[in-house]
Length: 318
Image (cartoon, rainbow, N blue to C red):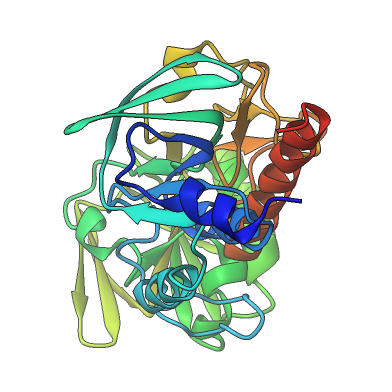
């Protein structure tokens, strides 16, 4: 057992270079949970926060037990305040430029220097690329969404629009059809084929003849404008979002990737490179068709990644 004196010496940041047990890169739900789990097990951890979050524009989180309706910024602030109670966890507002080294001796380069760790958790999140429709980016998270589990209920008994290619639109219709009052589907570009139009109409949706030329929010409604006219809806669900790795570290480290664009991990979040774990929507197991962009699942993944590193450090008697 480490004595209290030894623990205090380990956590005294001014005594020279410090080798953290784990550096967690990214301070969304996955990274915050990984840091908390490490802190509770008295493992020295550094949590690095770039200040960029996938749900940064979202007004309220949903489908998160005990936090349904909580603003994401409030969730993060509460989590960081709770981390302050753990002497083994340090939090810095600093983006990461590069990761080098190997298991047991990683070097993480920041704008102001370098820090070292035995293990790394990547929790940097994904970035969403939307169809090039004027006004859509401004609505993202407030009037335009992609996740029915996160935002469908708030549109109960209201008309919505779905924008995107037919197959993905059909999936959204299946999920949202029992919740909303009506669905109008717009192609992201051009127009739907006769076959796609017929299949979407068979699902009970109305099909617009052309892609939107712009979208805009007016009070509690969203106006979708096409060359044919305007439609007023309660919100938009985008079926053609392309998600990519927000940070370059997966490519930089040569991690094995999945066709979804996510990092391949095992049950404990371990990647193909020893000592590097990934958590949250940037990663998933090969048995799943794609990453699950949900706060609750990100929290669980962050805990599993931390537990995996704790187990491996124990195996090395560290």
